[in-house]
Image (cartoon, rainbow, N blue to C red; front, side, top):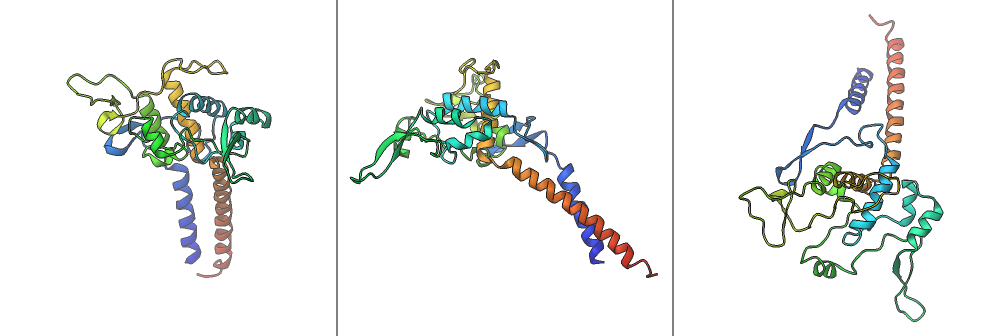
Length: 258
C-alpha cells in the first residue's frame, strides 16, 4: 500500500515538472498585464544564451551602471557570460574601488580586481537620491526576482515608454509607461535606438536592448540557474528509476498473494 502511494506521488510530481508551463501573460504589480516572452532560459532544460548575456552586460555597463548598482556580482562572475580571464581583468581595470584601512587607518581607492564586486555608482543612498531628483535607483542584482513577472516585466517596462494617451495628464518629472503601475514612472526612458553599439553587429533597437539587458539581469539574479536545472533533471531521473525499482519490487513481493 505504501509502495503504491509512493509510486503515484512520484509520477504525479514528475508530470507536474514536465508539463506545467507559464501562462501567456502575467499580472505585474498593480494588476498590469505583462505579455510573456520566449526566453532561452525558460523551462526545465532552458539555458542562457551567452551572446544575449554579453549584449545585455554591454547595455548594463553603458546605460544602467551610471545609476543602478549590481551589489552581488563580482567581476570574476563574468566568466559565466563567456568572458575569459584576461578580458575580465581588462574590464575590472576600468574601475576604481574603495579599500582599506591602510597602515595609517585611512581608506583609499585602487584599481578594481576580478575578485571585487561591481562598484556602486553612488557612495550612499542620500547621494543616489540627490542625483536622481529624490528617487532611489534600486540595486539590480536581484531585480528579476524582486518584480512580479520577472524578466517579462523588465522587458515590458524598458520597452513600454510611449507618449501618454490623449487626455491623460503626466505629473512633473514623471514619464508615461504602459506597463508601470499607474503608468507614471520617475525614471526617464534609459534606452534609445542605437544607444549602444554591439560588438557582434546586432542592431541595437530599443526592443533588442531591453531584451538583452533583461536576460542579463535574469542571470545576475540567479547565476547558478543552469546548474540547479541540471541537478533537478538528475534528481528527476533518479526518482523515475527508483519508481521503476519500487514497482518491480512490489510485483515480486505480492506475486503469491491472491
